[in-house]
Image (cartoon, rainbow, N blue to C red; front, top):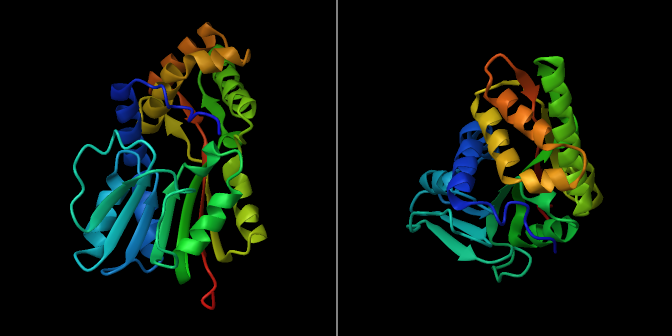
Length: 265
């Protein structure tokens, strides 16, 4: 398996990036999770909890009669020791030992895009869910990326960086538009009652989203340059663009899917 794209990122900057992701995307994640019927007493599984905001929030919702399990390969950003009803297991969801048919809800955000073959993970999750259990997945779609407002030169650099992102994923045998493929992948593997949301929001420079993408560009500079699609000047212009409140861009789309296992499984 290819190394995680941000595996070698500097810890302070990476934690800042993860916190910005939480600020931008947690409201929609919480809304989607509550829409499943999430309530006190549920057993929930959070895969790749990152800095842990959704993990902690789930714990407050399910309360002392519930259980929230986080599975994380590298828990270095889970800064606080989890307290009941939250527990963290260090490992890969494909290989950790978890009780079958024991979870009411499984959630993962921006995880499967980093796997060359996410299908087996979806099969594992189906085995872990109770009959009729709910799956909530959120994945990016970088094919939606588009610079909208800015000088022609800045927009050209933004387009070059977006091409570099696409090539970086392709060079790792990954799909930069994976989010757009997620609904059909779930249908092909027998998941039921799919509900799909697609979002491509326009963000101004200086927003949390723009700052997050700027941090990504800083940390992945060498990987972007290695694609040949973007130059040092492009990356510097991209970072200035992301800081400028007069600019606007769709940095990437997001596809959110809710599905369930068969109540007869």
